[in-house]
Image (cartoon, rainbow, N blue to C red; front, side):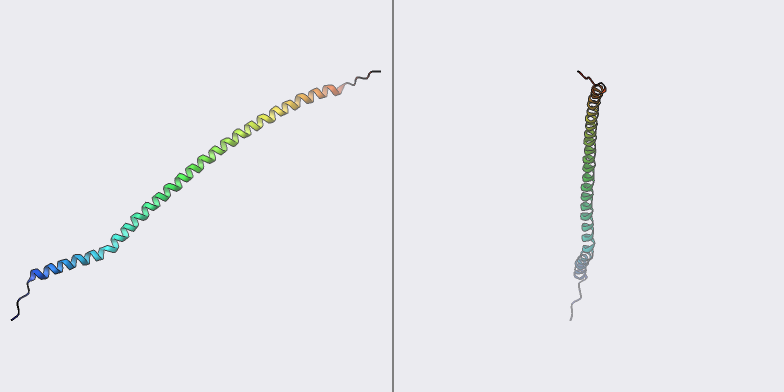
Length: 104
């Protein structure tokens, strides 16, 4: 007649299949987690780059402001010295023009 079915053989096959099925079910979840972690890393890198760019831009703006401030100070000093020179020449011109010296 027919031999009886050995339960160990069936169990081992079912165990193999169940682990395979479980791995197959878990694969999309694992891939999704990997994608999520890689996107988080990329976002962190991009955020760092943006922060560094903003910091360097602020430094550059501050340096430009300082340079412009120094330039304006030097321009003011030049204007003041020029005004003083004009003032002294205008005073001497005023003295020259006040009296008329006529010789006959």
